[in-house]
Amino acid sequence: MIALTSLLPIVYVCCGLLPLVLVPYSRRHSEKPGSTGLLVALVGLSIWTTAYGIAIASTSSLTILALGSLVIFGSQLAAIGYLFLALEYTDTHELTPRLVGGLAAVVIAVQVLSLSNPLHHRVWGETARPVVDTTATEPLATAIIAVTMAIVGVALLVLVTHAVTTPGVRRRQSLALIAAGFPTLVITVVDIYLIAEYVYSILPFGVITSAFALAWALFRADFLDVVPVGRKRIVEEMDDAAVVLDADDRVVTCNPAARRLVGVGPDYVGLPAERFFDTIPEAIDRFRESGGVDTEITVASDGCRRYFHLQRSRLDDSRTPVLSGRLIVLRDITPLKRRKRELERRESELEFLRQVLARVLRHNIRNDLTAIRGYAELIAAEADGERADLAETIVETSDDLIETSRTARRTEDITDRDAVSEPFDLAARLEAHVAEFRSRYDRATLSFEAPDECLVETDPWLENACEILLESVLERSDEQSPSIAVRIERTTDRATVVIDEDAGLPQAELAVLERGEEMPPELDSGIGFWIVSGIIDRTPASITVETSGGTARISIDVPT
Image (tube, rainbow, N blue to C red; front, side, top):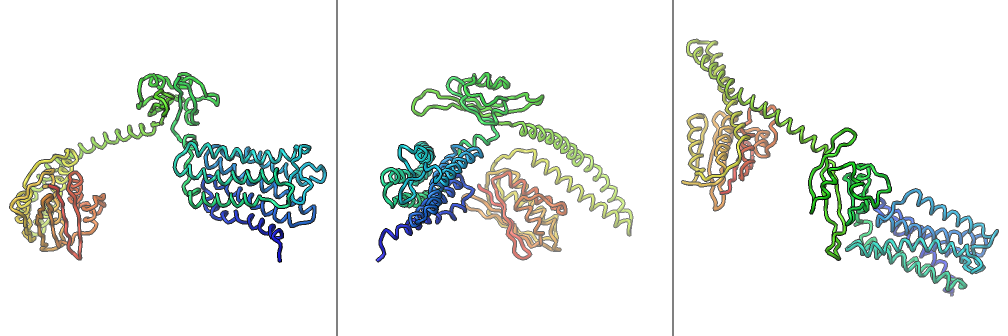
C-alpha cells in the first residue's frame, strides 16, 4: 500500500500546475490592464509549488539547493506579478523600466545569495526541506522574506484602497483579487514561522486558493473582460488643459497639457492661480467671476493668437456644503475658429456667385433666349426645307434652355425661403395641375382619382413638389404614350399622393428622388427629381419609390 506521505510530492506538483490552466485565457486578453501582472503571478505560483514538490522528493543536497532557489524565485515572481497586476488594474503607477529593473535586480541578488549558500550559510536552514533560516542569527534570510511579503502587502493595500473607493463591478473585481493574495500571504507566514520544522508544507493550499480566486475574478467578476479605463490616464493623455484648484485658488494638480500651455515646471503644486495663469491674463479675470464659467478667451502664444473654450466648474464636498475647489478646463478651439472663418468666407463667395448666376439666368439669358426664339419662329414661318427644320431646332433648344432657367429660379426660391405651414385643399390643386398637363402632353394618358376634398396643413411648396414631380415624370418618359395614374388616398391623420407610371424612368434618377443623393452629371436633365427631394426634406412629408419591371410607384406621404 502506498503511503500518503509518498504521494504528497505529486500533489504539490499538481497544485503547481493548476495556475497554468489560466495562462491561455490571460494571454488572449494581453492588451487589457492587469494582464501582464496576472501572467507573471501565475507563472510564479506554478514555479513556486512545483519546485517545492520536486525538492522534497530529492535527496541530493545540490539538487535541493537548486530547487530551493527556484522556490524563492517563484515566490518572488508571484509577489512581483501580483504587484504589477494591482498597479496596472488600478492605474496607480505605470510599469516603468525603472520599477521593473529595480525589482529584477532584487530577484537576481536573492538568487545569487541562495545559490551561493554553501559558501556563507546565511539563507537556508538545516531542515529536510527547503526552508529559509529565519533564526535571529541570520537576518539576511528574514530580510528576503520581509521584502517579498512587503511587495505583496503593497499590492494588497492598492487593491483595498481601490475596492473602498470604487463601486459596482470594479469593487467586485478588486475583492476577488484581494482574495487571491491575502490567504496565500497568511498561509506562507504560517508555513515559515510556525511549521518550519516539519517536512511537509501547507503552501500548496495557498496556491490553490489563489488559483481559484483568480479564476473567479476572470470568469465571474469579468476581470480582463470589463476593465475600467484609468481616470488618471485619461486626464494625463487628454489634449485639453485641466487644472484643479483648492478652495483658496491654489493649484492642486494639473495635466501635461496645462503645464505646456502656461509654461510651468514640475514644481507647480501650491501656486496661486494668478501666478500659475500669469501668461493668460484673460483667464485670471474670468476666475474672479462668481458661479460657473463657460466662455471663450484669447491667448497670445509665440506671436500667434490662439482661442480657447474655458470652463470652470465647482468641486463640492459631498459631506459638507462648503466649496472644496474648482476644475478649470481649457480646450484649444483655434482650428475650429479658423475653419469657421474659412466657411464664412466661402459662404460669402458662394452667395455672391449665386446672386450673379441667378441674375444672369433670370434676366439676361432668359431675355436673350426669348429674342432668339422669336427670331427663330419668324425664320421657320418664312423659310422652308432644311432652313425651316434648323429654325425649329433652335426654337426647341430655346424652350429647353428657358425651362432650365425657370428650374434654376425655382431652386433659388426653395433655398431662399423658410418653411411655413398653412391649410389648403391638396385634391383641388393637384386636380388643376393634372388638367393642365393633359392639355400640354396630349401623347400621355393621365388619370386622376381623389376625394372631393382633401385638406392638409403643411408647407404650400408641397403642391409645387407634386407639380414638378408629375412634370418630370412626363418629361423623362421614354414611352411614346406613357400611362400615368394619379390618386390621393386619405386616412384620419394623413394623405398620400400616389403616382403610378409605366414611363420607364431610369433607376439612377429614381434613387435621386427617394434618397436625395447628389445628382450625377450625366443626369442633369433630371434636375426636377432633385428639386422634389429638396422640397420634401423641408416639409414633414416623406417620399418612397417602388419599382417592379418597367413600372414605378411614387408615394408622397403627408401628415394632416
